[in-house]
Image 1 (cartoon, helix red, strand yellow):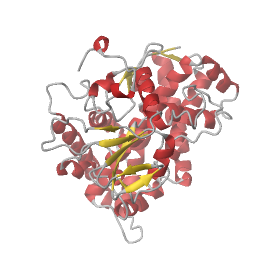
Image 2 (tube, helix red, strand yellow):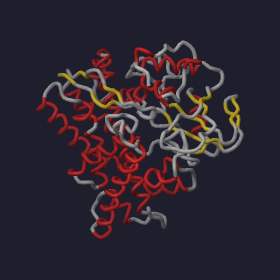
Image 3 (tube, rainbow, N blue to C red):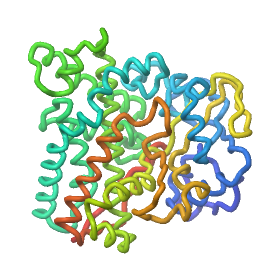
Image 4 (cartoon, rainbow, N blue to C red):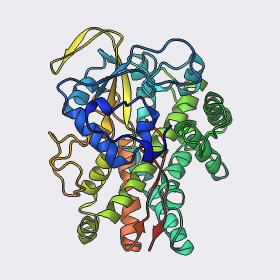
Length: 424
């Protein structure tokens, strides 16, 4: 990887390679410029697959980068053509079979397997069920701000505030005891931050580190599930291992993969949205004042705008199941497409002045929780609630809080913030 000072400027689409790790080390402003150039193309750009050191054998054919809002909506609505289950949705390259034991969750499946799993677990994420967790979210957010005020300025907003709320709520939902919160947090960082040397050092084998983290998280919840079979409580683990929904139950492996999905999708992404939102409010004091004028009334619009610009998940992958024409462009069977949500949420055709943070933006049809269709984020209701409550508590009790310069996660998949000081 070249040092930032040695990178050539991006002047045209020919200078862009989304498979080059160096691209994802560029500042966000340079990446925004690059995706703007890609959105202006008549046909989605095509890139060779990246080099992945722990995967042997020939690389795939490459992938089309879907960067426009309209393309991502259309592909999301058409899962029969744009498949999630053919080699996995969360990686560009097809992953080795051993990875599916821990990461083969429903996000990497098509119907009918996807529909079966979603039917079993979705009852925990209805608005009615989320309502039952509201008090827990409020209590947790209050305690987090109490601790923040006690520690004072200069603390790490990511680890002390943004990460704590979703981690606690997910663990409490599953019945994971508080003594294991740090363990879950560390393992989830390895899974989603494997390309960042803070979480997997340069001398470590990435595949081994990720598989070990997945194995340890799966073992944690499977041990808990075994205990809950004979000693049920009111947590989600008890419900999933003891309930028989339409004659179906989760297997031990399915429960483990579902927990990993919860941890990485429900914990990491919400923490990154909260962190990104704090930085947006710092950089846009006028919008912060606007929100402070009506904290509750303007919260829904503010949260949607935070999720739009944060776009915690940069992309998901699909594989084309048959020759298909979409929005005037041809896609061939077995080709791959990447749905770049981060880019779609900045599409000038849909969002006027798309880089502007505007908590009153209406309409705001962002795809920060994924596109429409069967893979729309199952935990969107919970994520919105957590973000709303966390900022309500901060704005009311620490209205002067400001975030420092973020230290960003080195990843092509997650738009993450690792550390960020705060002052108040």
